[in-house]
Image (cartoon, rainbow over all chains, first blue to last red; front, top):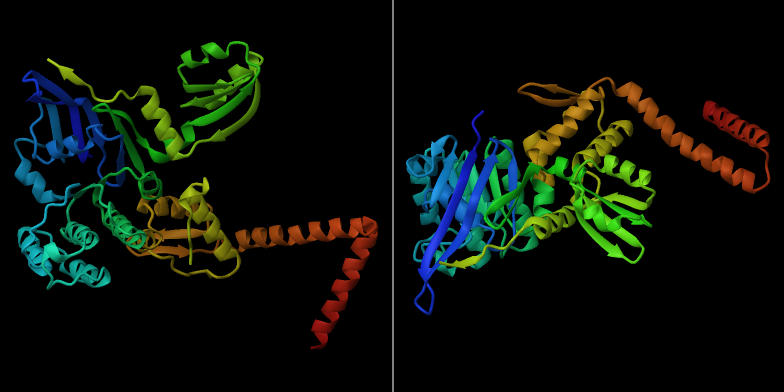
Length: 310
Length: 130
């Protein structure tokens, strides 16, 4: 099956002038290779400036890459951006709204442009989410504006939903409502790309996770596999503790006097066996939360994007 | 009917498998009962639909559910076997407790067996009279 999203060696540099009038170059994507299979919910995590939003903008044809390629359902993101946008529902992080338009006018406008509009779902969500269609969009609370944008995204019957921080500014009940609809869309066969900082949302609802940092994807994996692979191992009295960080499976070593904690990214059983053979006493061993895994990945490998002076 | 805790450290599908087994064992889900659709349950529990599918498949493998293409998931008659196991497991917990309490009170294991048997016979007789 064609991947829903695929990028190869995607690079994006922005050029500008510094305050001193010198030419500056900022790299937001530094060779991004991404593949998101069709179906399922993929969470995209990463520190601010990791390049998440830039990648999304390029995929939707809203920005041009400096080099590399990007495609959505096999369609080239630059040449076929109109065809792509017909199949994709996008909720951007910065909520652009037509302030003067009444909520119901906005919904009607999107519905006219959507070939697979689900009127029943739109009506149901208007009621369920208590959105008054007669109110002008600028007069809606920011939470309600967000819910309205999510509503039209869900009702469009899109094959791919791209949601950039969709739950920012929502109260906990609305977050649950939004994620619940997201699960329903996925059950109906839509592919969902959820860009978020909220690890608990990813843990709850995603089946795949992409961790970006410094304009690259550090990890893209099945969430269960990722969690099954990582392990924290605590040791006492290992003679060669200073060299453990050179082991390929070991992502991170913290020392406390005679004790050390290793974060192991894979093959934990083999690592344990080797440690015991070397005479280390393993005092504890446990799996990691997604938060711990995320921090280990981004702290170990992730360089923040640099502002290089040309 | 079901609820999950994503932060409990136990994978969500495992939590679901356990709860569905429990519901079948207690009779809350009887033979032939239809389970909520994947779409419905994913929406209600706010979890990934693939997680629900994974739980249902696992239960199908265990002979507890049957997926009927285009119609949904049903509790099947692998039921009696699992139900016995689950019932037995729960009963065993009480038997273990009886033994531990009895020994602490100074009874021997043989004495406890006699006392329990006599008490249960008495129950059976009073049930029979009614």
